[in-house]
Image 1 (cartoon, rainbow, N blue to C red):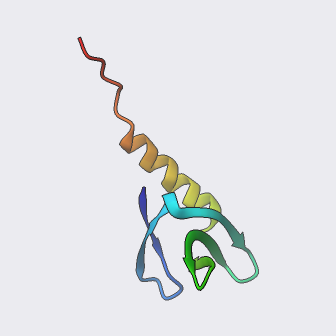
Image 2: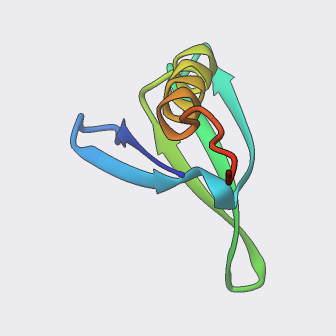
Length: 75
């Protein structure tokens, strides 16, 4: 699933959360670091965003609710 976050300058950044393996908020620096499984030079790729981990989880849950319509069964 794709969600919109914001980089350090406040510009929109669209992140494929299916590729994110970990994210954590750094309170002192006021950013969240996201680690993706898309390697760059054989290392996990890092993205830094302004949203904290709680905000990111809320966006993920909202997107999951939006994508999960009532299950239809064949008659």
